[in-house]
Length: 281
Image (cartoon, rainbow, N blue to C red):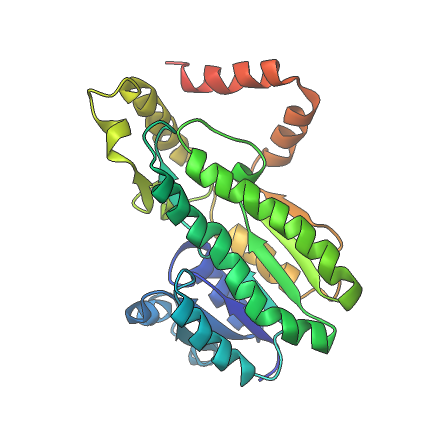
C-alpha cells in the first residue's frame, strides 16, 4: 500500500483538502469521518481515479468509545502507519458566564480527548516500528486568546500542551510529533460550522453588544482569509519528511509576526490592541 496516512475530520475544510493532497502524493489515506454518508465528497473535488483509489473512507466518531474501539481493530490489520493527522474539531462561541460546563466538556471531547483517544490507538504501532509522524492541527487560538471563544481557545491551549509532552515522549522512539497552527483561513469553522450559545446572542444579554462586535469582527475579517489549500500543502509536506525538526508550524499572513509581538509586549499592551480591534467601530 506504500505510505499509509490516517486523517480525522476528512469530509470538509483542511481535512478534505489534505486527504486529496496526500493521495496525490501517493499516500494511501484512511479518511475518517463521523458521517460516512459524506464519503462521496472526494468525487466532487477530483475525477482522477488514481487519486480516488488511494482514499479509503472510514467511519469514526472521535468522541465515541465504541467507534474508537472498532477503529482500533481496523488499525491492527494495516501492519504499519506512517502518518496520523488529528484534524477533527469544531468551535463553540459565547461568553464564559453563559457557557455551561457540559458545553465546555463537549468542546474538549472532540478537540482534546478525541485527539488523545485516536493517538493512543496508533502509538503502539509507531513505537514498535520506530518511525511515524503525528500532526495535530491546532490554531492561532492555541497561542493567543480572544474574547467570546473561551471554549475553543482553552481546548486548543490544552492540545498544544498535550502535543509538547507527546513530542518529548516519542522522540526517543523515532516518532515525529508536530503542531500546525493556522491563522485565518476560508473554512466553515468560523461560519456555518461554529456554534454560538444562545444566551450570548440574546438581545437581553448584558454581553449582546459585545458578542455582536466580536461576530462582526470575525465576519469582516473573512475578506482577508487565505486559501485553506496552503494549510493542506504544509501538512502534506510535513507528512513526507523523515525528520520533522520543529514542534510548531504557524501558517497564515502575518501570523508569525503577531505571535512575536505578543511575546515582546506586556499583557497590558497586548490587551489594549485586542480590545481596540474589537471596539474600533
